[in-house]
Image 1 (cartoon, rainbow, N blue to C red):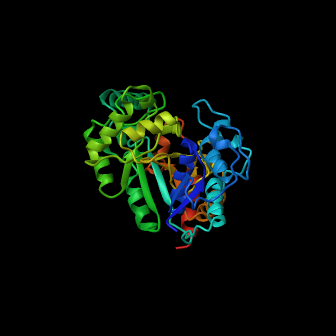
Image 2 (spheres, rainbow, N blue to C red):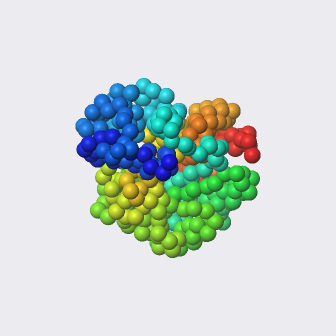
Image 3 (tube, helix red, strand yellow):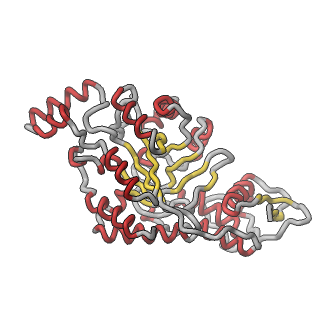
Length: 380
């Protein structure tokens, strides 16, 4: 079977979105129309006027679209406008929209490939490439004076002789050798004009450019669009342009810093117009889970896909290492149930030589231990 048609006389935009989602999930062409081979379905009428109200469960097409794009609009928001997964009155630890799509395929006799157990991806946000370098001379001088006045001679020595406390390239090179079954995806924040929550490095620094270029020679590197980029005209284009220039190739992947405005239609449209093909911002900031109900990447439009990330280090730092590993195992089993690999998010600086150099640094030691424990316990 190479295509499936479902009966509807006047399919609209919502019908087209459902068809797009199912085409991606099933690997066949799905459409709505009145051709002789068109199949019937339980049409509740929700797709004619979609919204945040939950459609009848029997209307599987409407329910999948509602869970993917409308449900999160009903959740409480934090101070950054992000939907709070903890306020969800459902189990977000399973990719329920995708599971429903698979059940629907079985109901209509669409043969899907056997579900395997794909390898995981560790997603590394480079909010702080360096602790000291690459921030401009004012920051360097001011920071050095502050360290001297505080009597922090270790920081003074690191500024002069290294190693930089946040620069974790050596750790990730070893990680790639220790865990060849996994992959790494890096996202780098480069912003000359920084917003309230941006403390990244400057893209015009030679040290920064050399470090990112070296990282890109071995690993995949995308753009980590800054918090402030949303507030500046052309902010996205400027920052993506920096990454393009340094790596010498078009930037096709991006992930929003702080997950700001992630999933909103204006931002998705902006990314599409800039030629971005993958947005890795489909994630809750406050809790583990599958935000849009998918574990595999799913299309937002003809040219842009969302890539779900199921958990971030900050979600689990309150747990003991064995509990961190157990949670990751549970999420990975859920991802495997739909034939997807698990994507796990973390931060570059906490794997550097001395992450405690960060002001008011949180203790991520149990997260680091739990992450490695999970990777060691996984079947090879």
